[in-house]
Length: 149
Image (cartoon, rainbow, N blue to C red; front, top):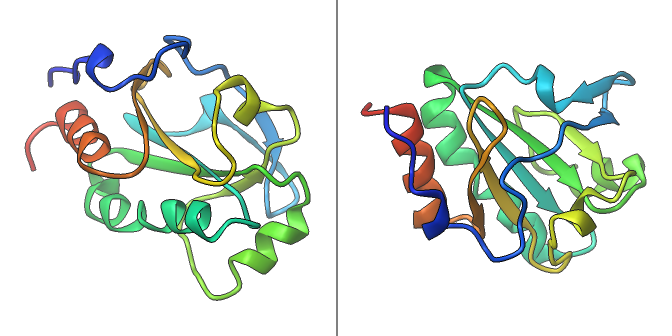
């Protein structure tokens, strides 16, 4: 399938490729971005201290549920480095993808506003295809990468 045109969706100043990272996950191990098995991966930055940001992450759920069998993977990156804050913020929400705490400054490197959160669409080589709030551009980029349903 053809990739979405990157320039149409990327804010200025972002690198073309998302760096690999390894962060502690909620099960006591480590999650490595390069170990994600998706053909397309959503990296969703959010903050347990911001309702707007938390809602941004939760709005990914319908897209993920409809396309995970086609190769969509997802990871949530909490901009609060305390894993306990992730658990407390998600006590009433069940998400089927891993959550990690940003302990290495990823959000800062990708210019993410902690009050709003942000979703990054990555192809299988971790190229950033789209970035921004969850919405039509993000959905379109994912669907273009995964092909017709």
